[in-house]
Length: 206
Image (cartoon, rainbow, N blue to C red; front, side, top):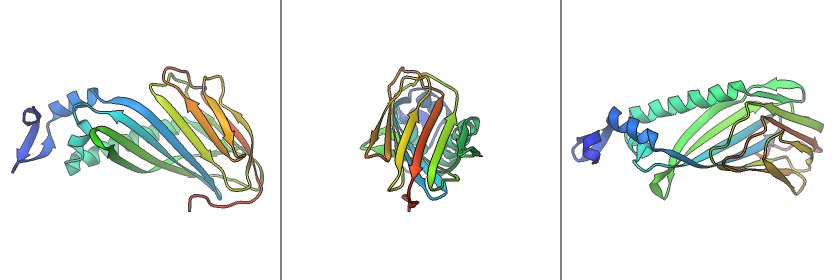
């Protein structure tokens, strides 16, 4: 079946046809997502990891050809940056602008289990004392389960967590780690607020 959709040179698949890519992309299903947020000295960096089930091998095909891979990375970059630009992220009353800085595509043991990693960061006026992070975004129905970890500097104490009117739940672990849980089919709140007190600034991402 693969030969029907791909150009083959010397026995190796080098370019997936547009017909195959169009059909295969429609079969890709989101499975799970993780977010890892690291609050550092005057910046916040975070990594979003999305897992998929890919029965026809869409991502396997595009990672075998440099142009198709670069085209996909460019598309993913533009899409993610568009959604980030729609968010209103404010730290201590200052509007900040998250930016995509890296994207990678890999596989978990099987070519049918691809994952995509987005690295995102932005300057933030984090200071000793009370800090407030807020994010307003469009509420939606989650298509998959997800979990988010916020890791704050040593000595930090999380004082308040508010996830808006959605159905997410959360825990505060060891005073300075916030874990947020989301479930497929639930409504996101469209708002996030975390109030935290920083005693001493350390860059936990270095």
